[in-house]
Image (tube, rainbow, N blue to C red):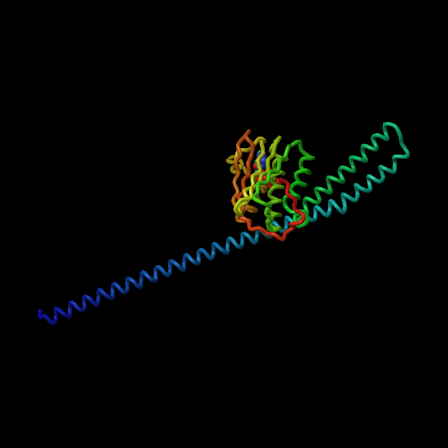
Length: 281
Ligand SMILES: Nc1ncnc2c1ncn2[C@@H]1O[C@H](COP(=O)(O)OP(=O)(O)OP(=O)(O)O)[C@@H](O)[C@H]1O
Ligand SMILES: [Mg+2]
């Protein structure tokens, strides 16, 4: 084989190697691009799913708020009116009787009066605009007073903050208010607690909220295993926390009480119901 042919073969081999390397690089680039596109597509689908879930949750919570408003109106317009009328009738009987019967009548009248007051405060606690008018902390204090009246439980509200209590956006405050209402509802229904501590710690744009009771507690594994489709309270708490990009954790064991802990990032909303909010600390 002559030198010329050898050179030709070397050139061909080099060319083939260059072609193979170029093609490999091209294939790797195409594969990488394809993988990136696939990942992008996956993230887009995940993003859409999350958006969709948030949308569904928003709709569900909106429906729940509408239901609360309807119940609140029903209590105010119908049940409240009827009780007011009943109290009037009872009071009209007063001049016609005396003695022990009159005492009973007065007692009935004040019981009806108390029921009207309780229903009014229940009706108010159900409306969303309690947050617009009062702000979260005063609305919570009203709620705590309402719950204290129907249970023997001591409920303490602790608020730790730097200078002033920060004001959050109203929708956020409403969600936190509903979270605490559900937690209190659970304590009334299940805990048999004598003490409850609700603690807010506002620090560096993070709100740490804990609701702690010293009641009978529950076994979370048993609850997960036997969860009835009827129980939605704790699940809703988790979803509500997610809506605020927050974290939620439950610590509970039999005989040792239950603690619900939340962490919510927040940005302050200086203009919101600022004039109404008092400093309870
Ligand atoms: N503070 C608590 N103390 C003791 N047990 C609790 C407490 N909170 C929740 N539980 C237990 O966890 C279960 C689930 O609570 P969850 O709020 O999800 O449902 P629920 O209160 O039974 O029904 P609802 O859907 O009306 O809220 C309760 O049935 C109860 O056994
Ligand atoms: Mg519940």
